Length: 221
Image (cartoon, rainbow, N blue to C red):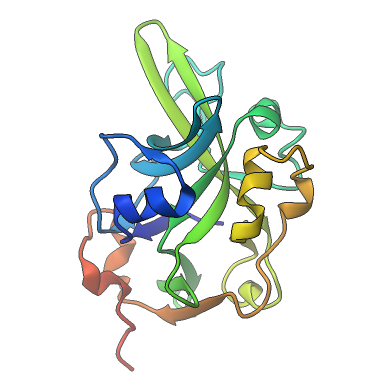
C-alpha cells in the first residue's frame, strides 16, 4: 500500500537527478504529509525528453463523469494492472516515476488504535515509485492524474502491511519509462531486504491536516 508520503528534496535537484525539464508549477517542498488527491511531482518521458511535472495523486478512469464518480484509485496492484480496464492502457503506454522522500504505513494496537510508521530509504537519495498516469477530460473539466504501483509485501514489510509500493533502482528508471524497449513487468516486485529504515511516529499524522517536519521524527520511547 502507499496512502501518504513526503517530499523534501528540492525541485531543481530532482530535475537534475532525472535529467528532466521541470514545469514551473510544481508543488512546493518540503511536504511532510502528502495525501491522495493532492499534487505530486512526476517524471514522464516523450518525444521532447523527460519532464518533471505535477499530477493529481489519484488515477481517474476515462469513463468517470467526474473525478469522484467512483473509488479513489491511488494504487494499482502489480498482479492485475495489465488486466484491469482502468489501468491496462496506462501500464502499456503511460508509465512514470514518482519520487518521494518517504511514506507512512499503519498498524493497530489491541484497542484498534492506528499506529503510524514512517519508511525512509537508507541513504540520501529519494525513493522512486513505479507509477502510471493519464489525462482525463469531461466537458470543460481537465486533469492529469497518477497512481502508484504496489506489490505483495516482502517478509520484512509484512510485519507492518501486506502490500508495498514498487520502488525502482536508478538502473531501471529508463526501462520503466519505456525508453529502452525492454519489458517492464519484471520490475514490479517488492523491495529487497535492507532497502528501508522504519520507525514509529506521532499519531498526529493520522490527520490529513497535520503538517511539519516533526511528523517524521521517531516517536519517543
